[in-house]
Image (cartoon, rainbow, N blue to C red; front, top):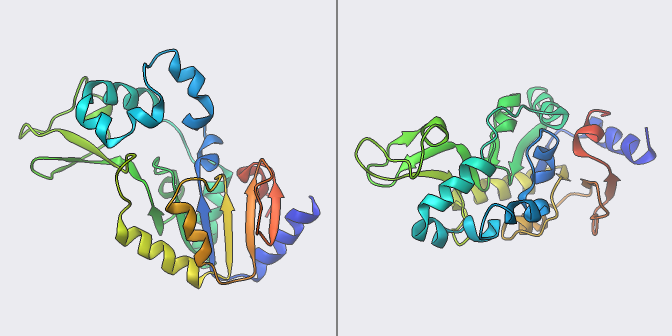
Length: 236
């Protein structure tokens, strides 16, 4: 166990209002790839980069191609929680963790048992009809072909935030409130390059800001731990 992990363990032991803010690196350990790091792979099969396909404009103009990519690259329904998800759920059950704030859309935190999860970018597990508003399970998209439609004839849209779409302000407000109350803020598996979500860190008022990442991205942190998020948290 490294000195950094020992310090993280000590801080976690004395904290009672932990907030975790995670990104794609949390899910990659469950076998869900980060599309930003594998663009080359997608270019062999798709005529557009992922950021273009996952935009609101593309969804409206080329829905068939959008859903082809979405089914192939965004739905990993067999993925299960990893050590990071389980540790956070354990902390919440012990009353030590206030909330999980995630940029991921896979629902793995809830699958691990976490209750208070603020999904900044929505969830693939929720889908709704753009015409009547009826909600549909993920299977309505996963098991369909072409553009999925509701019984009323309306198109079914994933309840995820596409590029060009704004974040849910209520979720943002709750995330800000949790971060302001935190006595320790742990950031893991994110490059903090996507705004406005990345700006949430600035609302932290405490002195135990921890960054856990595989690369050196701990600027401004009180403690930086290099390593995969699951391997690090499994030692706490």
